[in-house]
Length: 498
Image (cartoon, rainbow, N blue to C red; front, side, top):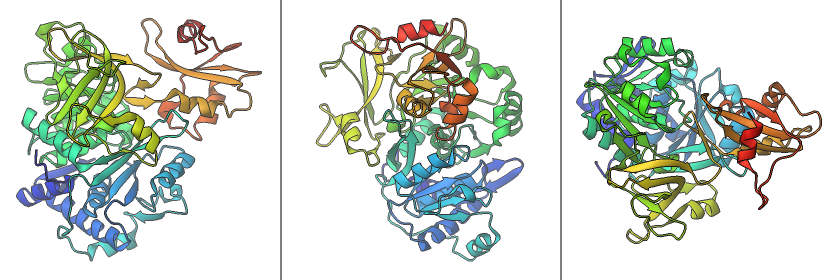
């Protein structure tokens, strides 16, 4: 790893080395590294004129396309950090994110500018006046001091208190991750990465900067093409995608034999089954099982799948270079191989903490007794163990009620808080129900008089919550079942859902 480099500096280096090579492709449109870098420099100069500087947080509200990575790169070049937002999210939620992050400026387009709160200024990249003004600015790389500990992006995840929380990520962790993958899989010019995920999901950081910091080409598709498995497969074949980052939910939808050019498949977000790992592995394709929370910069452990080993389920492996993993019991001591405990992660991947949440930061980012002065460990809340043969980490689930569904983290408490604001809901519990032989379903258990239907629940929730947090089912109960010690009886809930 180039320990002193920032993300935009690595992209600038490729723009100098291979200026004519493709950096971005989207629906037949192609930008070279030189073109992308020059446009980002002009936009960065404009943002600086508007008062953007080091540690500023600038919002991005944009559909997929070349302008999305352009905005990210320009914000970093201006010394600031970007806040990705999904146009599909409710306006109230977007307003909360911008207000909580202190975001006074948003890079967007004219069609989405109406979703930007009045308190924030909108820079519309497709506005003719803005486009003309940018052409008059310098395309030279900005001469601004940059440091890898500088803030790069802020990503919000579901919060147990009913409000999403912002995680503060510096450059250093992403540079470590992309540099490691480039070495591990010989990634460079000629490779093509697929951007499959929304920029609000931290996997997009690996997809976008995994490509642009290695001289590869980033392949983007429209939101509609990525929702249709046949269209997605056709896009990957037509564009010759060689590197992909998929959640486990995507794997059954695609035919690996139809994607012969895909040579590295990184899988994460949820438990990978041995069946799918074997199905996707081939002599010409590596299946790399990755694990990592947002707070540890996308991915922090990994293991290549080896079909011939015949494990019941793939392991999440060992910590990546410059990182560390510890399995700790309730007493705070490390557990021996074979014993389950909470996974704690340390090293250059760690976030600074949570924006405006010092108490939560102190609770989750704890002093590292194995490291030097000031070193910290992140408490993941995930239950793991080292295998007896010291082959790596085995993932077993959560030690709390947090849910992981289709790669997204969902705090049931956030959904429950909004459900309880419905006038006909007296009590509410949200849990993940796994019917026998079926896909897991986010389920809302509610009590009350004349309780709302699923359609009414969705109509109520979607004004505040993103689509991925909407329950797929509503189960009406006379009362929420409790255990002897007064906690929610989740086994009884699961039985009630059958």
